[in-house]
Length: 80
Image (cartoon, rainbow, N blue to C red; front, side):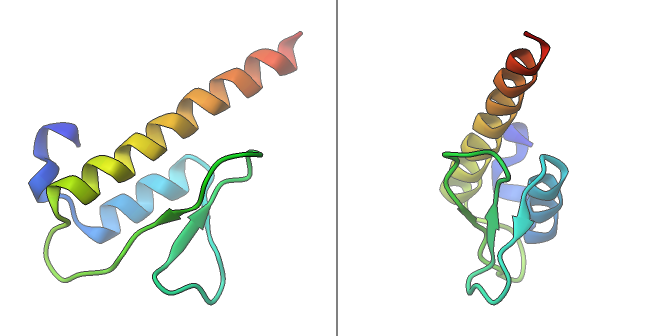
């Protein structure tokens, strides 16, 4: 997705957020996706027809990559 920052749709980012364990906070506007991991900030994903702006997509991907790192740490701690 990083290779096509100017061509990412709301639905793709939402699906990616859900695939790393985030769930949409009920009643939030814009939709806020929260992580089950402690200390992770909520991820707002604004719906717009068409594609997300490059900067918005990059920031969202940064947060989701941070989630992956946090999951990795969580799993390592669980093995100990």
